[in-house]
Length: 424
Image (tube, rainbow, N blue to C red):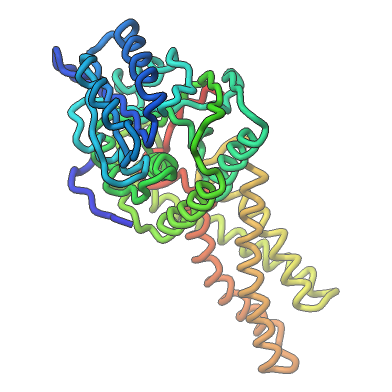
């Protein structure tokens, strides 16, 4: 993945400085062989924006190497309607089209929607208003909110919910609907995020949102009414396979810290007192290390007490496993609350389940150490067992902190925590 970004850090959020007569919004419509639907779609969108949108706008038709009359229709629309333009790409890919248009647009708010206009256009102004006001960095339509009204088949409904569940479990995503074709972004945010996004197809949306969320940017969600297009040309199986590859690639890059997301975070607010009001935002890593070490020391004492108690009546392997399991539950709960500042019961079960994975790694290290000690000495002294276990636990502790910070509690980083408007 590309890791270069030359635009520097983002400033604090602020309302847009609008230039009279210049387009505030650029809505991109990526198309491939849509000669039949393109004309009605653009005319309907143009009429809606002319009637309801209070600022100048532009509609850009991005043709992805169509082989029918789509380019001709797009040029005709650009000639007939004010504020409509068309561009031609010689390769397919929704992400490729969005990257091309967004990178060259001068509008301060960039958006896109699918050509079938499945999403009710009345949600467009609520989508972009938080970006214009400076409240949010990105905005997405969600079909999975309770107040959304959606008409589609059971198959697509299942696939959509399963995909978003996958993102939540694998990439800790907190946005609710990654693939709804109805999104917007502020231009200065796009300028810094686009160089980091590698995908050029359908996974482009998801990758953009995951990186934005991990960078601490604010994602606004708008419940939408949505009617499925029965003539959609999306190949579900192929798209799903590409999405899974993308999830693996992005997850691996995030796990190894290959992306400079800390350089994208905005300051907490426009008042310096705001930052002082957030304990732990300044020097987050140092504070987390101190908290983790304190919890780790107490957990080690608890572990040794439990091990000694169990060892009096059982063998070393069982005593080690039982003591490690019980102390692992206590360690995860304490780190969740004290080290990473997670409050409430939200995701508590999931955090404990992830903590069990870390426990399994610690168990493998300590049990392996005991096995090696047993192979080297027939009857090792109790003090020797404890020394070996302490050494193995020190190694497991380092790995535990890295996994806690990068995997289990990734939202609490050195940068401000991502605050998302959740209308669900």
